[in-house]
Image 1 (spheres, helix red, strand yellow):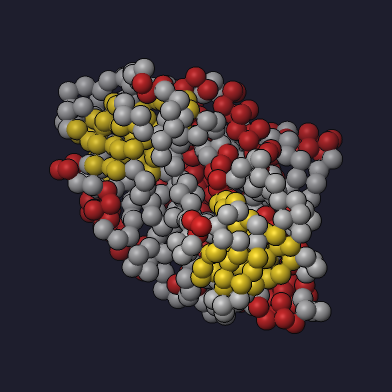
Image 2 (cartoon, one colour):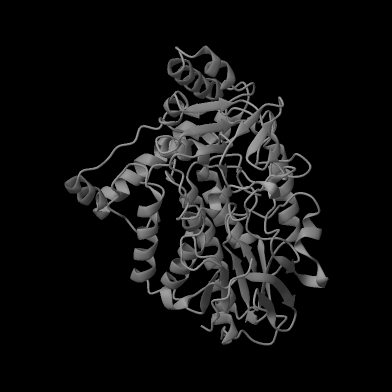
Amino acid sequence: MRTPSIAIIGAGFSGIGMAVKLRKEGITSFTIYERLPDAGGCWRSNAFPGAEVDTESDVYRYSFKPYPWSRSHARREELLTYFDEVIDEYGLRERIRFGVSIESIEWTRADGYQLTTGSGSTIRADVVISAVGLFSEPQIPAWPGLDRFTGDVVHTAEWREELDLSEKKVAVVGTGSTSASLVPAIAGQVDQLYVFQRQPGWILPKPVTRFADDERLRRARPSAAQWNRLKALYRIRRAIKGGRAKKIGTAQNRAVQRVAENFLRKSFADRPDLLAALTPDYPVYGKRLVRSSDFYPALKRPNVTLVPRGITEVRESSVVDEAGAEHQVDTILLATGFKAAQFLSGIRITGRDRTELQDFWQADASAFLGLMVPKFPNFFILYGPNTNGSGAHLFVLECQMAFVAGVVKRMARTRSTVAEVRAGHFRAYEQWLSKQWEDSALLSTHNYFRGATGNVVTNWPRGFGLYYLLTRIGRARSVRFSRTAPTLQRLTPTADSRSTSSGR
């Protein structure tokens, strides 16, 4: 079979996993384009102290690659080692073009897609797979005076290794998952730490287990690793209850909230001021549920001050909060998240009839199973709209990889040059999805899950088992195949496409 040429954009969990899946299916006509100088995606760029997963390591890995994790919740450094092992084991390094950003993707009826890089060179591909993820575009606040600040201003996704915080007065902006890892890691280094919180979030304890060397090896054996993965998936399935835990008023939602409330009360029994400031006024799951056993104790350190207000202005050596109070600081660390709901906003993507993807979406991003959009043939989105938040991120990603690989194999087998989601199936899926958010806690407050109109655009509403079934059925029934271009050609990157010049 002659397989289509494939361009994969991004060398994080999605892109590397997709390449392995294609290779396992006998498809080698792919090239990965990564804007960073090395693989790892968000785990490469988010180099801030304390960076680690809040999901068990047993499920935060590929099903085909066990690993002797040192902890129950892997840290960034170990994840990067894991990436390198996967890349080398499957011979992917020679297929990755590092330092190459993709600025635009344009469908041409007779010749597939034309991709333009940040250096201005062009690449042709029959199939394009976006693996840029949700967390690739940092959210930078537009505070008045930020450009006049004389100290360091660093977003956690743009961390600089040479940044020295010792004996500094530091402001951390945000109290989400990133802040919950960062604050405990730096609290002992700085002179004074101000933590600015616009709105508190619900936090559950995260018991972390460290494994001895012999246990690490035992757990990495294929049979033990598979068993531990299945047990972890079962625990997630039981906790999510098919999405019922995220519905306001359900017994499952109330049970999770009781755990969070008890953890909060126990942590601040001696600090009623912090208890009041850290108690949310919305139901659990209204924002991303934070998991940390270290964040609350860090807030009680004598050199740490929680400021339960946002910042309104930045001056040369200070920040001003919403109450008008001024705080002298040397460094501002932005744990302000990402433009998660603005899918693919950094790449101009043009499909059939000169339709631009952002115009097709208008306000809120949507895709069939998060993967395919009408009028954009041969274009796939991994970790796309409404595929986050199942609790089993890598399981869902592998469902998507199987979907894409299955479509590509069928293109080759039938000599089809075009694969496009059926418009009727896309509309039916959208209608079904819109009904799933009734009484959802995700609509109860401001969060990164929601698009411009207030609809939830990032998260999956049900359990990961249903998503698995839908991707299996959708791959077989919801994609239309045709021959509108003369032949499938293999991707032959130009010399410029191997450039290491960086762009977006």
